[in-house]
Image 1 (cartoon, rainbow, N blue to C red):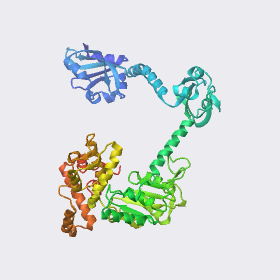
Image 2 (image 1 turned 180 degrees about the horizontal axis):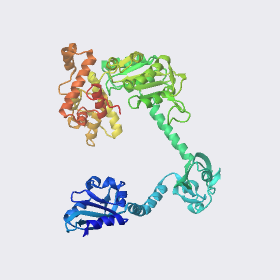
Image 3 (image 1 turned 90 degrees about the vertical axis):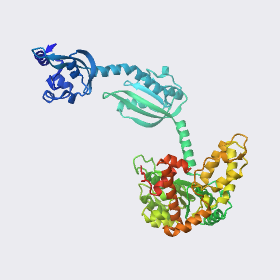
Image 4 (image 1 turned 180 degrees about the vertical axis):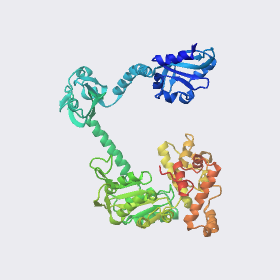
Length: 581
């Protein structure tokens, strides 16, 4: 066992890092090598508690147990070291501290890790390059080929034997070698057209320099088949047309119902269709507002023009603006070369259907007002106005009057949209239509599911007739679809036990109940019928959340609506803060 004077002498004379502590865990011995390991000065270390610098070091345990520890690999700050630890004593042989002899192994461990993984990295890189669908060729600093992948061979018809160790011009049928140009200039090139291989395949080439430690060590080229790019572009445009240019495929004859409420609404929509006026479709979620929008367009003089549907709630404010009005080249970072035509411009001569119009921002409301007033648009990043001839059909399930009073919806835009308001009745107000709707839906589900269902039993129909239908026709479709799925093959009648449990209503929401409720509470409710309906919806949401202990997923299941729709209704009724993220 060393005595303290020996340890101190060794710390002064030897190059090894030496660190020692006393009985109070204070660092009393520290040489320059140890201070360098800790990235500190000796004066900043001596006198400090060891565990302030090295909270997990075992030196105090070595001192207390009077044990000796040789060549143990352990963390030392942010480094890895090999340490030998032992106690030291005073001149009388009493243990008064412990010393550690340290050797920095960080670089060794890092190098060892790199060596151990080098083969794995090489195998991984080879697998990645070989599995990519892009053709890749690599040349060294002398311009000689050193690597190609299978996609390159499939595209050019050339094998490794034809390319490796050869000039980069070996694969070019028409054009100049971009490998040579990049080796000469050290600047990447993009989008260069040329023809390669024996079959003179038309391609687009991107080549970039390979810089290692500041030196040019070669170039890598990625080759794209132009015919594949054309094919993908066509598929993309086709998908965009399907999404944006949804053809109006429904007419008023596709709207099922024989009740006075729905017949009056269809008649009103039919009269509106033959005019060029803006139409505002209002109604709860699931009542069929989009169906009416299709029918109005199909019955109008614009039936041969485009019918473009835009869900205003599905897009962010900035994205919605560029989608609606288009933008010019350079309008913002990432703007497409040549700019973009907006949906209003694409709908010129036809109809644009703005669904969820109540959700657009006030900034966008101002621009939309200009379209309705002046019949002109201004693209993002431009100051020129373009005339458009577009018929606008808007739809919302929001209470625009409440938004108007709250300053969230422009009054002038409200009156521009509300030229011909059409209120689509909820299913609970046209219960007589439920048998007709059920029979129509059964026919659709028979085709979709390959079933032979004929009808709904009287008991099951009675349940459907008494249900309140907060999700309207969309919910009826959902309930009936699940019931048919629950039926065994060969069953032809939907029975009560096939229907999912309809938890609502807590009371019987017949028309008479609503009349009684209205007569008793209408005088106390601000806003008349809309206010009374909003009060009922808010109370229903609160009651359901209380039953589920605040669990919104369970509440949505009980109310037979999507979680997104539940959050929307909670926000609309001020029961949660709106999330703008």
